[in-house]
Amino acid sequence: MTTILAKRWHHRTALCLLALLIATVATPPRAHAEAAPPETTEARLRRIEGQLRALQRKVFPEGAGKIFAPEITPDAALGDGAAPPPAPSGNAAAFGDVLIRIDAIEAQMRALTANSEDSQHRFGTMETRIAAVEAAQAHAAAEAAAAAEHDAGAQAAAKAAADRAAALAAIERPVTADKGDDAYTYGFRLREAGLLPEAQAVLTDFVKQYPRHRRISYARNLLGRALLDDHQPGPAAQWFVQNYQADKTGERAADSLLYLASAMTQLKQVKRACAALEEFRQVYASEGAGRLKAQYDTIAGAVTCH
Image (cartoon, rainbow, N blue to C red; front, side, top):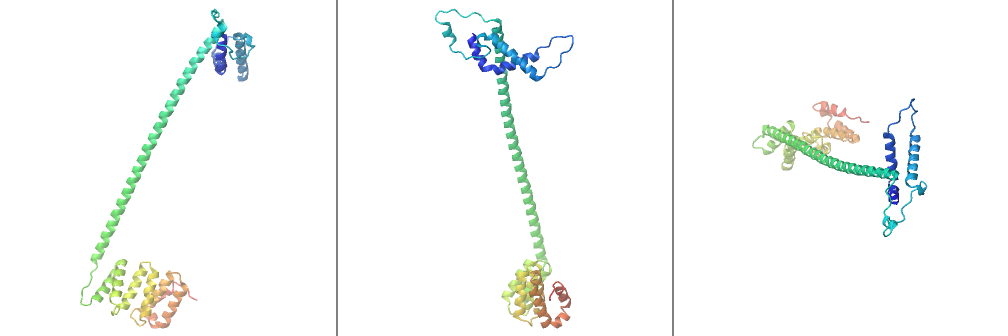
């Protein structure tokens, strides 16, 4: 019996120490005439270790307080026909009771550990499900917002298209015997109404179909102005140069040279803007002092020439 207990003690020394500590703390102190001073943690630990060594000496008197692993099994120690060992002493029985209590504590710890692991698993599963639900809700909300934004954009685009179609329908297209003049007049009306892309398309078509029409100088200049109004100074400048070089005596050649200076100013090409203004002053001095004076003053005031 002593050998078997020694083996179990070898594996549970730490738990024995815990059990003795619990028993020591749980045991109520004896009454004294005067209150004893509080015992420090180090003193309590030394006292419990002393009690543990005393218990070892009582249970294993031959071990001198040390724990030895069994060298033979209980059956071999008895031998054939040997009588069973005597009943354990009171100390051994007490120690066996401690081991039983330790077994119970171990069983409770295993149960608590299992419950804790199960709870952690359930909690982890719950967190995963909650995260999945939240992700699904966020995705659905994002899709709904995108759909709403798309619908709003589509509605706005549809309204803008409808408004533009109504504005175009309100522009009267003249129908006379002079189709070229009708095309130019329609382009002029479109530009005046602020329908710039439509005006550009009509005037470009006019220039291609009627290059010798009496309105050609007007059309090229007006096309450049429609592009300039549409914040396209580069293409606008090309039409102004073409109109001026094609016919310097044309009805709107002077206008094109002046607007060329404006386009170059917007393109931050100051030297070319100043060159266009200087040419205008030399070629169209009378226009600069008369019909185009206000226009010249405005454009010349937007650029500094040396």
